[in-house]
Length: 466
Ligand code: NDP
Image (cartoon, rainbow, N blue to C red; front, side, top):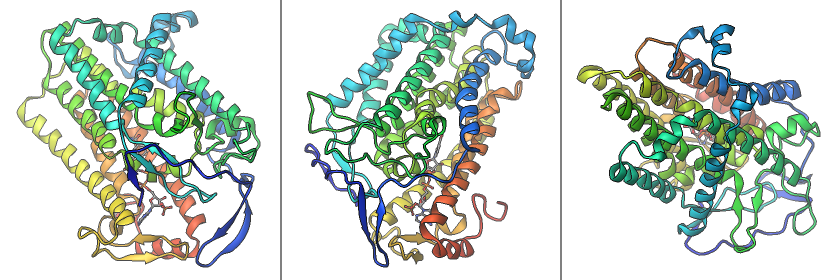
């Protein structure tokens, strides 16, 4: 169980180049950073494709759906040409300055807002990284400031109008920042650790192919040691996962609701639902901040372009599409439609949250009354796989809950355009792909035990369907 304490973290044990793995059944000396021999994302070509296409798609989504129009004819060249501002038009110095200030604010809050230091899961080299858990307080602080400005100065304040007027420039600023960050972590992964040994790399990011490793990420836990806080390691990946993108997403949504009020003199129930649902989702992930430490992103994936772009650009600028659409295309749902959409959201949330909590509680406190009755498969690796409760219904039942919620976020936009439903489609692809990656990881890790687990829990995501 991760230990909590309010003091500065313990110094991480020195990195080594080989580790004697000592589990119940295995005692072997393995290289610390074995070469990656298996590619995901169709290898370097796929990695290059995703690296180029995801920023292009983010812009495309903006040009396809904005206050001028939002129609599925977005693939028509003429419609794009009429809106294309030229390459120079994508760059907006004011937006770049604002985006840098955003990071500055978050970094200052990371330093000054107190929070417990928590240990992550055990790493391959036997160490555990240390993480400062003040994301929830940061979220509350930032959103309280924004709501304070809204209540005090009103929706015409520059904090809100700036977002609408410089949205394209903000996308570019975040893209440039995410590329710069990915280049930085890639380059610094080659700098030896403090003790002269190798840094711990992700098993999947050490292929030697520059494009692929840049995309997937090499170093598992890229860390900055701030000169004025030498004993407080700043973990770039954990910081990026839940703050610059997730908090910005909520802040953008609020700015869009303010824009709707300025334009139409009212705030519709549809945009309120979208803001509340998505704000709740973000609040929930920050409230359960420690749970991120057991996710694939933290335990398995390195921090490369995939996570840098995903966290900094994709999440805030594409997930906020529904609120941005409603800001200029107001929709009144009325009581019954609203109630039906709330029911969809609650169903999804219930599955998502109770499944994730069940697994975290079982892994951290197996004797807890809420999970002590669950049956499990004891793996020879040492960990236990739950075979009843939520995790007995499907191997990734939590993904189903997440996907049901995705519908509740899109339904308030009505049916005038399919574009606002892009999230439902994209998210289905993401979850199916993620489930396959996780299966592969667990298959490698647990071997025969995983086969037995699959025999006992047959379905992947949707019971009796898939
Ligand atoms: P999970 O939280 O589902 O964790 C998978 C891991 O859990 C496995 O690798 C394995 O790890 C362990 N595990 C698997 N089966 C069992 C079992 N039966 N009993 C105990 N442990 C088990 O994966 P994610 O990190 O992908 O997702 C976390 C949440 O984040 C999900 O709810 C997902 O929907 C959400 N998410 C949201 C995204 C978004 O953009 N909105 C993007 C990605 C995820 P081990 O090696 O420890 O055994």
